[in-house]
Length: 330
Image (cartoon, rainbow, N blue to C red; front, side):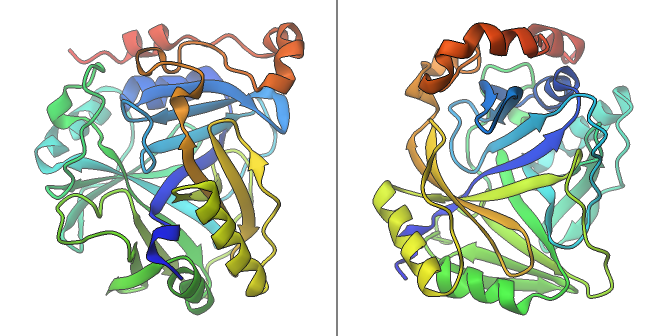
């Protein structure tokens, strides 16, 4: 398989409850940019909120389906992409601990893992998150957000897959998705796309996939507070077709290509049960908004425009200005 078919992580999608509370946490507290406000194409009465860096580059995008007061609470466990890690500079550690203290966000004391310093915390719905402090990530942050640029989140560091064993998932990653095994710490095994030039500083950030394997861990249950799927980035429709053909030839069952407006997607289950997506880089989030106006309007796919009045009537109003003001630095 050509190393260029998969270039790293594209986005991670999770399920949340209240949409304003979700916006408050990710755009307000964490200072991520609201890159796109749209709907769940498969459930148009539910928002689909995208957060990321200034331009919504692959490897920075965390997305949510906020279902409101849903009774379907999830439980983290095996068969899930359980913890999502964000990258921050080493000199930002003190800032973020003080910020969590200020806004009463519980977190674990910093731990060292590989050459990283890691702070674990959870969002209001219990979704597992980390800040990984490192000096390797040279990606620019959201430069005109309310978090000072020198301490702002750069994007993803990586994602954790919780599995009962690692062998079959590792085989998928390394033999068919262009990843390679690069390190081990206890039950944690780390992978990086072969297409990433490790000699070029900063390219590794946002692309790590870690398998944590434990045969005694209970299985996860999908629902509020859990990751729905993890998406890998592919450059074009043609490279996506190449990945799909490989998956079919190896006995996997990827979906047909689905138009998600800002990217094209195929989905399939990896051997441990985690839902994987392969998403194209284009068209991108400037498909229907300029960079300056990303996230400012409710964007609907063309086939739903005729239903705009009804859709807007059923969506709870949310305010980015309220989120930023509530968590403004200083």
